[in-house]
Length: 219
Image (tube, rainbow, N blue to C red; front, side):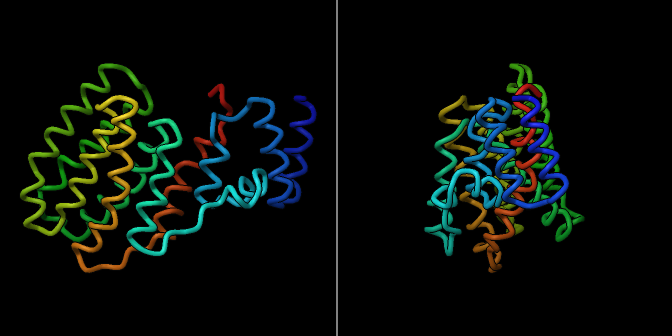
């Protein structure tokens, strides 16, 4: 099987063809060399080789508005909490970057930044101490929400707090909190009279999750 996997990988590396990539990924999944649900998650995010590996029914329709976005993000309830947390972290980073750019003089984004840093540290080392650090960061983030509302960034602060809750509230409740964080993204743009680019959000999550999903399951 190892030699077969290496040959499929070589073929894909030579051609760059998504069909060859799908054959390699399908074989890796069959050999247990991918994380559980990796191809399902990537197919949901529009990763072409994963869609080809699983079939067209694996690709969800892109959301076309707030109800569609909520239904699309609900799909993360099928998978482990860590997957929803990683997706929410990717969008939290996106929002924080915008917040810092628009309001560079503000101090309100310092605690949300610390909350995302604590979430990232927990993902790298999921210890009880890490969970406690995320919980403290979430509480500190909550203290900035009123000030953030006054600045027009209330939903952004709530989204980042919910991302932290994704870690501190256990598997089931944490997954629900991380999904709620994803869903708040739309309301952030509505609050700021902006256009929500769902395609861009999905691509941002895909770029963040693809290396993790496609790493060997032993890594």
